[in-house]
Image (tube, rainbow, N blue to C red; front, side, top):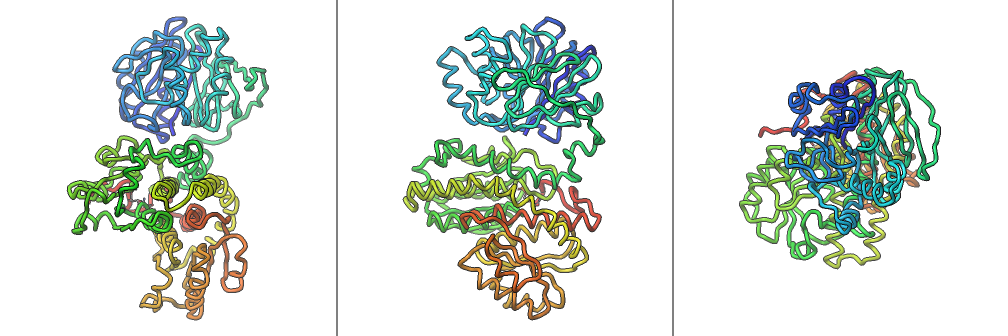
Length: 622
Ligand code: AGP
């Protein structure tokens, strides 16, 4: 996820663009750049790595970039490592090594989103004589617009609509054309984009906070629409190039609320971003109806040669590992050992070149997980990092890397990154099973179809959030909560319990349901809350009986199960249902009500949901 801004009007653009980017930095912060033009002079591009202040300093707070029309970008890398040439803006011609300087070409642009078919489009452009200086999908998009602009000698709007017809993926694009000074052209599909106007000036941004200081009058451009932005005036077009009228909306939010897109907390916003995070991650791993791991470098031969998989991670990433263990072993028949990274590094686990050690980490900087990775490499194992931050230390040091595309996660309690990791591991399991002959092409297709339905099913679960909000008000003063389940339901319980305790500070434990009777059940007393996860049909009755053992000792029961299992209501006090899917993948759905329950319980207790006490987003110490 990245942030884009744009301005055209009577004032100097660069300071306005920098101010806007500063309010979007939560969307990404590995590099930033501006393109500003002064009248009919070519645009000047300046880029900087790292946080936005580097760019502000480099441009003397924008004063070194004269001009009243410009675009800007803050990056969360999805294609290509964080580097100067990969930083936006991108141009339709060549670009110097620093990425900065006057734009000699016709089109310069910034982009938030993912062009899924950028490889095939790049090959097309190469055949037509284009060359490329970066690894980004954005450069391909800008050059494709330029291609149509020149080939058909059409205006920017038509060149952009032709591009939109060829592109698959998501985008919020902002483009400047050398022949159209003072104008910015935008296009949108699935990525957020808002256009603002005031007297003699126009603005664009990925999110409202970036322009709220300058105007509260905004247009929400629709999907597959194009905008032509002039000072104080905006025209909109549909995919056919026909002009369309959009309503002007008055923004009533304050700036703080707007950065959360109207959600009260980043955590709630990120819970609701899960459909997109899962869809983007999955789409990056599916090509022509099959799981394609080629971007990781894990060839089918490597996957066939694996005899043992070890997974090392911490916290929620470890919970993903526990879930993945069940899925990989069941689908692919490969033995999987899961270990806390902080323990793995001290165990004398035998490794060999046919052992694949997977390290899962959202930040890619967790000290224990990095240490586990280094130990695995010392022992001669092949290593794969599953990380959310491109260019992070764990990503750079692993032999192979699989990136999740959840975008920056601000809340300390992970949600969308966890879900993106889950779906990535599910896709890996399907590929592993297929290449090892454990499943047929037909079964692989069925499993992939089930995975591709998950994002919409998550959206369906989110529609039931009021029930979780109500139930959280009943349990806000509970002292102990037990989450129990068997198999994958145990893995789901682990994450549900952590979500609850880390943000509501209520003591909570996750237990393998069959293990309760070996001691812990002595803790069950009147009104102790026991949440039973019941999504695995083969284990349903056994877990339900464990729940009833707790009920007979005074426990208050919540059941989490799949649609149709309404018999649960005869046994429990409160039931939550999620849609049915292939039971290997149900964790992606079942975790959502538990995330919401933890979130609303924390809110009910008046706590700092996004920044819980004692915690940090990335634990870079041992
Ligand atoms: C989970 O909500 C926590 N934020 C924490 O357990 C986290 O999952 C753990 O610290 C691992 O972080 P990583 O994924 O960045 O390595």
